[in-house]
Length: 228
Image (cartoon, rainbow, N blue to C red; front, side, top):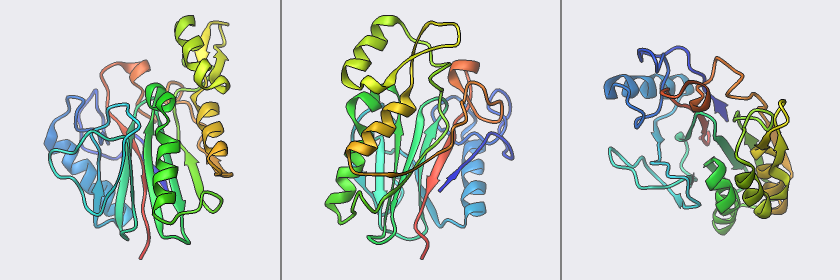
């Protein structure tokens, strides 16, 4: 499991320089070069990228989708050296693995996807293919933190009705969401106890892309794969 940052690629500003997102306005050739470079550094044969739409839809995959990926926010596989990537710039990349079953998964979990339950959906789908949540390890990657993710009070109330753990306030005492706490609680209820956190806040970390901080910007990614 690996988390990329914004350095070491070929994209020009405001996407400088390792932008891996193909739908944010960057030069497609630069994005392709960045993806190829990252795959080579990780020793991956191929990588699956999704067309992320803030859903709870997940799918088993055995190969990349090509130039027209379907709308999904979670994928899993048992194919060695096939990378799974979740693109983010304030939402959470959530990576899962059951090495005994030989299954790994990746989810993109923002506010809407978290409310809809994309991470529990991925755990359930992997379990349907032989994984055991009690054996799974999870990495919740960088995201906008609960002290920075300011939202209207009504939105906080609506989300907390589904996931009470997300209720938060900013450092200025304004309404906020703590998606990390919400996702952690979802994993626990799904039976996943071995959870590691990359607690960096995207808004506060210049090495990571942040849409809330910068507006027009690129995407970093969480990667997971099976070794042979």
